[in-house]
Length: 369
Image (cartoon, rainbow, N blue to C red; front, side):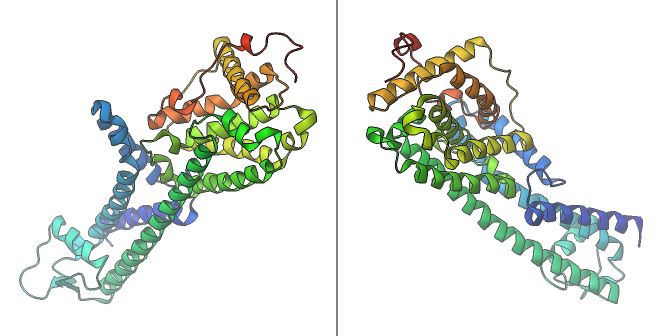
């Protein structure tokens, strides 16, 4: 075996390992080449989208499909080049066409390699020794196996994407299309009747857990970005985290303690954090400074607006603005790191418009109903 063939073997093993880790091992951040390749393609798409002006959102929505196509092409090209390094030294000797002279250049080796990865015999070129016959057979098995794995992987990716979009749309509909967690909480307990809220939140927790694991199994999901902000992972995670924070800090614990302490509420809170943390740890997110005092003031104004929504729905409240601001300050930085990476502004994620908390908290005694 020549040095060129050793290099070709190593190159094929590198790409096969990357395919194994990406498709079969299926955990975010474990691939050798795919994560870096995906980031490179994303950077190129984002750079070109930035030149499109007001069409930037539409251009970014093409990133997910383009990254999938580019990754498949990257794997196919890598395996073909590796096989070409194995085949080129054998051209004209143990690998020859049925008639005529045998070119020995690298382009011919690429042609034979591409054919041997898909069809036993390599088209018009045929192996003439046991070793090269085995080589063509192995190439054919590798090509067929990778093709079937990639096709099944694509089906799973788009199935997971549909389930993620279903969850996002469900959350948006539960807010009445407003994207406001306070509206969602008011709809969960009309007339202070939260009897069905636990089961509804339990269903959301299961769907959210599936979405979190889907992003761990299929990292390419992160790059699927839609023009409508309601499908953003950042937005529905924000809504669910804001919802659980409002449940913990705004509802009257004497009346609604069972909901506040229920397992679905805690599951939603932790799973939404895990989803955002997974994206933050494994993808190129945007660095954000920690919230300062002014930001805490914005949290309190947002909280005041939420209480106004709840009170207009005749839901008893027991406000604790400081605890709300503290809890939100713990999870919102994750949202602010993940959201901008996909081109979403915080105003597209946080749809509640803050109000003056003095109108909601005039006196201590007026806080409780």
